[in-house]
Each structure stands twice: as C-alpha cells, then as structure tokens.
Length: 303
Image (cartoon, rainbow, N blue to C red; front, top):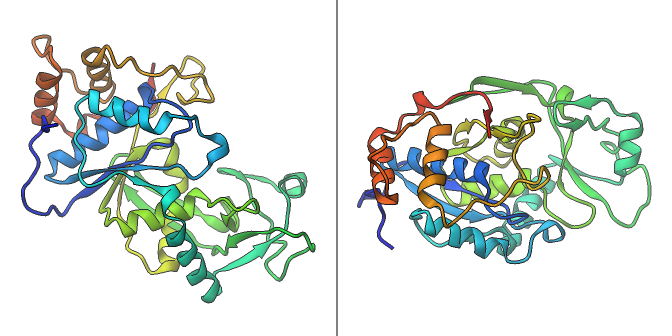
C-alpha cells in the first residue's frame, strides 16, 4: 500500500512508534494517539514503527492484534519495518533482567499485593512499596517477583507537549516490579528494552503514560541505555472524565467511516481540515502539510 504522506528515502534521525495492546479493538482514543504519533514522525522526516504489546495473554482479546492492524491499514497508515510482537521477545527481557541482577539493581520480592495494600500509602500510581524485601525475602513462598531499587532523588525530564515533569521515585512509587511473581514481564521493563533495541529516538503516546516515564528513565539509566525524547498527547475522555478504554467500555472505531473518524481525530488534536477535504487521501495530505505540535491541546479532550 502506497503511503499517503511521503517518507524520506535516507535513514532518518527520528524514529517513532505506535504500540497498542491487543486487550481490545482500536477505539477513538487510540486512533487519536496513532494519528498524532504518525504525523509527528512524518512531519520530522522520520520513521513510524508498529509494536504489538502482547505481554499479558489473560487480558488479551482473541483476534484483536490482527483487527488492529487491519484497521490501521484501512485508515491509510503506512509503517516502516516489520510489526514487532513483544510475545516473541522474552529473551531480550530476560537478558536485561540478568544484567540488573548481576549489577545488584534488582532483588527478589515475596510480598503479596494484599500484604502491601494493607499497610502501604497511596502514591502517584498505586501503592508505594515499603521496601520489606530489600534485605532478603520476608517469606519462603515458591514464587517471587523481581523489583528494581529506586533512589530518594528526583527523576526529571521535559515533555515536548506537557512541559517539565518530575517524580521522586522513592517517595512517589517505591521499588517497582520488573518481573511479576506469575512469570509475566512488567510493562516498565519491556517497553524500555524494546525502545532501545529498536532505536526509538522519540516516544509520542497518551498522557496516561506520563506518570510511568520517570520509572522508565530510571530503568534506562540502570541498564546504561539512552533516553529518548518524550511527548504525551492529550487523552480522550468520556462524560465522567475517564480515559476512553476497554475498561470504560469504549466502542471500537467504525472502519466503514474512515473519513469521519479521521477528521474527528484531527480535530481533537487541534487540527481542523477544511470542508473540501473529503477523502482519506485529502485529509492525510492536508494533515501532513499543516501538522504542528503547537496546535495540540495539553489537557484531556472530551468525547
């Protein structure tokens, strides 16, 4: 399929990606993120890759991964390179974890969620782990998680849309899990390993992941990996102010109404194509010529 936005013929310095999770079908919020990340990459003469974040099989919707790819094709997205599936990359995550074990950055933890939540205080993203197993596992359970040690210091960065952001991981998060006790890899490790291995220079994604970024920067530093640029796009929220997601019963986008859905996504990102842009190709051509991050709103967008 030919791209409707011209791509550079020389290797770009900018490489971005869209990384949906197949826990549900593509909805209006995820389409908005895909459009924003795609246009930012193309406007900067860069590549745009696809990665399927299929690390949690119990939560996945059968057939969702293939449906997401078909929907993106119908909407005219053109990605670079092969689609990458996290489920095929366990060896990379294991190698990274072993590096962290060897360097003393991680430790086994036998604490259950119930034990932690019974005493821990709430942080910015769940309960702050109290560090019980830092000196050795408190119990002799057969299974354990692996936690990454954090420092009592600020991790700060400047988001290209949201501006300066920082967290003190020790106070706001606590030592966090990289490999769960049930054997599933945590998002915070997998995403860092994949972005580095794929050479991602810039990460454009939804603002719900802004709170995760300091953790990912800490993982990068512990592994000696480069930190990409970050840009967190506004979230699409329902009438209750909740992020549109499978959990909030977000409906799948209508692949039979491409022009309407694409125009809606652009408008929510602060870009308003003229009425005479009616076809998919015309909308993409206009968007490619007029895209500017300065037009994108910072705060949530109502559905």
